[in-house]
Image (cartoon, rainbow, N blue to C red):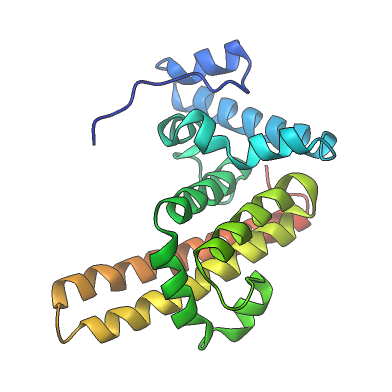
Length: 210
């Protein structure tokens, strides 16, 4: 896929966007990433009764493009606010692009990861629309609820997906070992993401997620 030209996110101040688009040193880029993440979360919480603002924040990737959001936060460590937001928005983008496959793997995983399923709170039966709704609800919680709860729900959702992906890989092993191996790796990566989100939730609860 060709690299899209960087577009200044409409919700950013011009000086913030210019700092991202420039060849700033890593320290400066990190400072900008943190500043923007904190500003978005703070602004979302202060305007949590503004439904239009909340919808724009949830659909940030839809408005700005995944590449622009990646420019903001993709290089941020997992145990930071921008790193956590990046993982949440990347999860939403994946769900938007392939809800049917994700719903199928979620249904597979829920039977072996029941506790995580309860925390995630996806409606039963979990179809594509229910999967989309839960991820949007998680992002809504980032800006209008308890951020640690939102992160825990996202982590639980990803853990169920990881379990379902691993089960799917086991079944594929006999017919398509190459695809099964790739799916097993994805399941492992999902478990890492779930752990990252859980750590971020714990940091937020103790006032250390910056």
